[in-house]
Image (cartoon, rainbow, N blue to C red; front, side, top):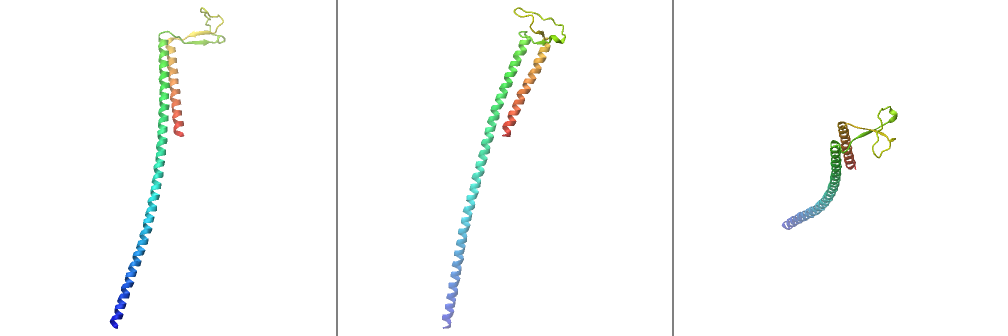
Length: 167
């Protein structure tokens, strides 16, 4: 009977080892399922964060593109204004040089200026007294107004740029 009880003991130990191994495998399987679930959840969170970052990047790109288009249109407008002003100034300078136009100033009769009022055909004697400017002085005055016009156009362009970027 001694050998039967040792077989029983050996069988019992073997059964115990197999059931412990099975329990260990069940635990490992459960742990593996938990890890898979956590990995899937982590992957989903990363995917959502990535999608949010892509949407934000796209929105920023759209804003930048809209600003670039707005600035380009504004730049074209100011370039046209500057070109038109320069063309008009060149035309006026040419007319002054060809004596088509003469600049004159209005004289104040109360200023004690001894300029007699000249009458021209079709004018009235009591009209305001005017004095013609020397063509060289007229050219300098036109140059000064040209610079002022260019400065105003450049200032408007800068203000439009700052307003567009500040939004």
